[in-house]
Image 1 (tube, rainbow, N blue to C red):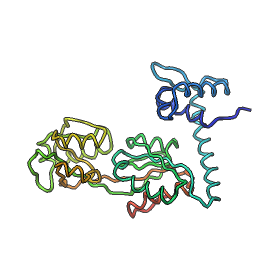
Image 2: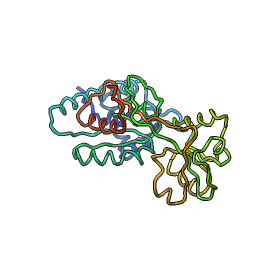
Image 3: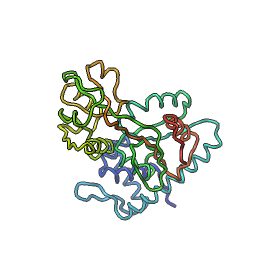
Image 4: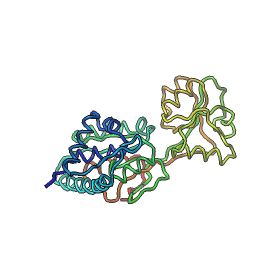
Length: 300
């Protein structure tokens, strides 16, 4: 009887996701030869070809796709078994993987994760950053236990509930003249715009804010990192619209000015979780910590 190696199945899924042995290895923290060896061992055990090269990408074969579909059920069964065992333990233990955007990762999560670590030393919480669409897909496929995403968002068989309202503000460098306390889209359109990368939920919200004012603003830069955006603004290269949580004292100390927007622009951060996700003690503690960000009830 063939004995499945869960690590090998996980490696197969990462190769399928990233399209190469080296990229999968980088995500897993192992070498490219180690990834290749695991795939070969799995193929020898099952006596089928699981990965093939198509153009420049490594792609699952028909057999590989079927095995990956089974992997989701296998992982769910393992998670359920671990959850059942955790119920009988008095300790909060385990590993939780949380997805979120870069802004929340830098400016929102550290104090929450620090409190969790202090309260539950045997519980580890890993964090992966990405855009909302990718994180929703990873929660659906059980590659993430949960994700803190920018709403609106939707996914198959997911609970998605709001946890935090996050206000946006305009920031400008020290070499610009003072603006009204509340900035309109028309006022800001007179300055170069350093924007979030296109197609992200956050960028879409900001684009709609301009469009509702009849302004079609074209950015001079589109960056995927909020820290890079802040550096460009601090250097006097333009203005940006960012979440207020990302306006830190050191940024103000460097001469950057912060202005409220008129009309007010906010985004809602929500927690996404599979409907069939077993809620062990560790996962429940993380959910409770994120729920503490607001009084919104958990719809689970």
